Length: 169
Length: 410
Image (tube, rainbow over all chains, first blue to last red):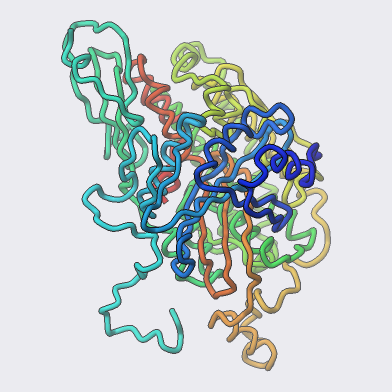
């Protein structure tokens, strides 16, 4: 199916609305990737859903990424949204610091965000403010760490029977 | 006032009901984790009043295997085995979806023949996925015959996978750049036999259930969801189409030359169990149409792209040829440079949009690989869909949503 919206048009329209809250725009592999202020994410997603031209009203995916070496912006929360009417996709990112990993929950806009946010909390410890039931979902409740953070290596580091010096495993 | 109303639970996981109680006493029923009716390991704690469900609380994660974490440690070519185990009813779609994501990241162009081969394999996988789901809906309504009859045909599809990759269930089919080998003569024979025999068996199954009065009475109106609600819940795939939204990744964003083929996207109207059943039935027919077209027009050419940096060379060349040995070494040791970047690619899986969000930092394994698992996303609507219905309808709703524990828990 043909695309009705072009990247430039969408970027222009969103920038016109939110201006300084759009921190950077890239289009890797022809997909708009916008970094936005974390406190504006909720408002932007809400606006995208209601906007008559863009009609970006479907939350495709939501997840976290951990960048331990970026001080002050350790966690990226990545939202993939799409417009089924216009056959158009967009990726939004917000960075939050590890000391205070908080962002507004999208559950009031998309009910489907519920479990996706719980999963992100479960694995990264990102707090979604306003979420009705922010508890662990896949891991066990008594777990006291967030396993997808980069400081947790996959294998037990005390093991001595495996040498990864040369092969990196 | 019943005890249930007193303990108001404001919770996203627990769905509240304002139904009047039937006999005034509320019972708690554990549906799962291991229960013959759940077809997978997940738990539902139901609050029931007589036979009516008042609320449901889901517990998932029983077979969580940390695939996203493991993916950050393994080289790219070793990750296909993880994707097998997501939706294990249609592993080849997951495999090929993942491989296409990596190919998109690297920028590999796949020969037309390999693309058509992939289409044939993926549509066979879709048929086997939908066959299981629909046959199980039959079982849950009390019709075991169709199930045993259709599973014979599913075995035939697995025989076909075996001819291509050597495995049946967890296929690990394909390589970055195409396939490990061309279709063998036995594959061609078996595929022709399958295309000849299957429609007869399938139509018999269809006549057994599709217009069966008992089956229709049993499934119509069971576990419905409206299109608006389904979109709110980010439904995709047959479940969304049953609710009346004609969204299909194969049509919206064609990959693997799907634009070359002529097929219809069936939609339902009410999003109930009967619609989901019918949408899957029709998709099986459409998949057959696609396979016929792809097989008839199967182009000449190579079954793999010319990418020696990523595609393991044949063993005899490794032993006799310097270049092949170097490439083999580099691939196995993870020395091949991979572009830095992030890419999202999705395919139409058995249950909906199966997406891969891959971030590469140029290292030998992905920096982050996230799977968009359609099951995980739409299963959260389950409490809403069954509240107010009977337990037997809840079981039907579950099987018709085709919740696969592997995909649910990653």
